Image: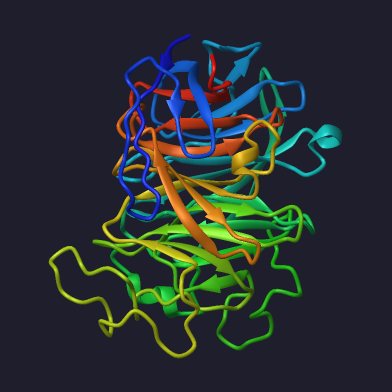
Length: 378
């Protein structure tokens, strides 16, 4: 195991401090060490925790790996679907069925291609350490587009056991994020068989796809549901500036590409050039410049009491973790950033069943890491 200890702390623009390499990481509300759980991974994208303490890790090239007894098993798990591994495409998220202990079922999201046309799919399968079985594609986002960008791909179960899937607007068809006749630039809600629940907000509306939950998104890369009250938090990449955290409401429009807090990559305005518009829900928080957020956790454990109730956000561009402190009303009151440039591109952030925080880094080789609290006196 290796330990890491490089830190950047920023609280709403107030200064920064760095820990020396291989020293404990000190932040405003916690001191911790970073322990490598598994290395040598090829662009890991997501991690899920099995009831027996083992962990599943997706690798973007199309492999599902098992961390068994604290060590990475050499052979990947068989039965993973063929993925479109090009550009931003590949194998994305893995989540366990709410009844996994009884049915051993999991769900994978991944990029799929028919010729040059691509999209995001969700597959359901029965898990065993030796391989997947009973594989079934339960959902395919429409339409397929000739692009290898902005696939979305995050999955999260709601408290009613319906499944949310984020879907990007595929970069070359940004205008379709406002088109309710497509799945692009949306957060989608389906049941465990892939059908649209009858209480989705656009069910019955002529020309609208019934699986749409929210719309006006660019490329959502983080999603978490608060088990206490069902609040859905989503994060997405902006263009040049304008990364967002959104608190989702069914049927709401989050503005892309009509309004945004950033600009196009050539410096020109996005849409109207405004930040808000009538009928658009503003973000709960945004970054300018962009940090390229990916992976989102709501920390509710007891290992880091100073982080309880806060959002933890991974970042690809600045290679860090951002802690967003939520006040009693659920408003983002402050931000603290740490582990800048210490581990690499942080693709996923999860709270484990042990109350510790786990990160995966989208590098090749990449790693799975665990944050362990330590007393300041150690």
